[in-house]
Length: 515
Image (cartoon, rainbow, N blue to C red; front, top):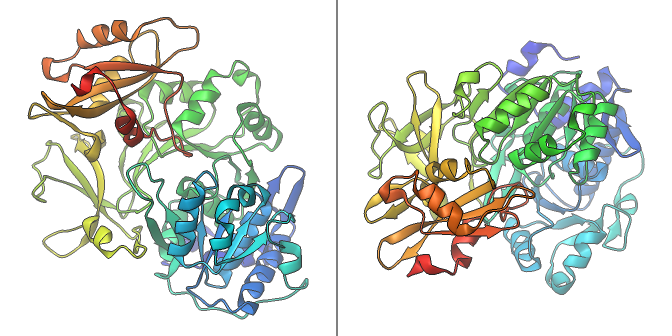
């Protein structure tokens, strides 16, 4: 096992750490999926063959491949093998439209596309326009079979020298705020995620979010770097998650709030033995105080919330179990990270005031791929020329340095010249006995410029009308905060990682509030 000081060193190449584990603990299980598993020796050997196959096909360091498939051991080995060859990986969401996927494959410049039968069927209408060579991870007719493409057993790649700043992966944004942007993350950025700690050689990490999400990768690679074991789920299911957690004595998991909510609502949750858990993580969407409290009360182990962006900048960490009085915040900047709050003029605000969050650290994206203007717009430089990322959120620091989020800057509603924060309104509506979930958006108004509309999903079996909820909430809100309309829906519209798609809610709204 690697000593703790190893993980505090300036930089190590992640695929080569896997090779170290393969030599030190060759038989230790690296990854489990369904009834199949690979030891570190087996994972390392497969990664070698993938890297050698890419080199045989003419790919060089800094070239790009794309993967669009369900979670599998093959997905992981191709990702790791590409990194060993210095080839950047673009993990794509199968839920994207065929046209969007085609655009992302072209934009990233991938010469090889690794996929499975499911995505091949979805891509049928644009397949003739895909320039990348297709390789099937699942042995289907989606492309050349992976087993056939791989070099023979025992093949080793030519060694590649890795520059810490070269691209590790290109992750495309979810598109909830516009066209997807390719976010280039470096090997150094990924190493900084490993250095945060939280994992060990004894870690057993249950992965229930997809590989194309940064949420997943900030858990996958630290687990492998420390020599732990990954347990993969192709698709999240409450009962399956709990069964796997109990069976494999899972110690770590990263989930989004909607997954925590579904787990807490599961009638048999408390019947499962989750006593092996050391740390649970949450990220990607607002995590309510009540839900944090319930998770800590009913689920053993610590609870850690990450707040930040795939683009990087500043990551905030809240160790909720250590700070039960700060659950309304997202914590403090991670070690080595710095955050500031600025106004619309780009100037720092006074202590205690509200401002847009900007942050700097070694964990920042290189750029948006092929989008220099968008990259420049996402950056802010202080008086000393230090690069920060604009995080797009509005917040306020308390006296102890903990950050309270007010809202996304783009989601702030300006009604009659007053700033309205949807999160304030959501907190009030959520207190209604019948309300299960709520999202407030600003829609265009001829009278006010913008006005708030609340989308509400009722609790199972609850009875309430839209007018009842609106009247109840407005009686508790300030005059300028009052909600113009309530729309009751079966469920809030979310993307693949659980974020409410407010842009789509705004764009599809048709009702009296627009008058």
